[in-house]
Image (cartoon, rainbow, N blue to C red; front, side, top):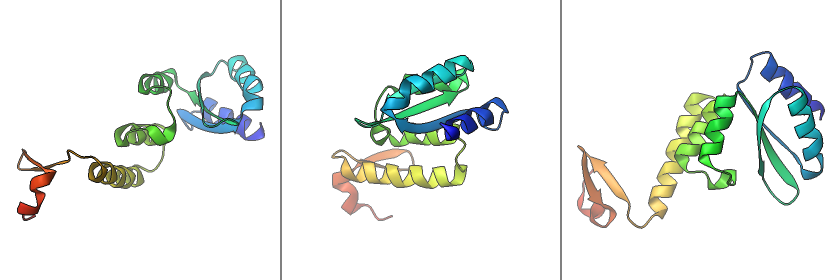
Length: 132
């Protein structure tokens, strides 16, 4: 709870617009009571049977999270992951690197992968014929 209070302090001082705080499920009521008392917008997602992810901060950031949906962080698309990391204030260049890595991985795992060259799409099955 001490770390949570510090995160709330950082938000209230304008240092961060969105915070992700992971906690145990047994503290959920205490956390929500504190955030409501401080009049802080929040969104809670189940991380596991015993853990929760508490997002809190600016109402617009919370609205974006709600639009993405209530799913595990590991199920975020590369684009959703990039948006979240940027909103949390993570280093933008590192977020770009993370996005490119995740996007490359997801494309290589999908069956109908397309490569773009000069705005033309070429199916993955034809990739061996392409000299890049």
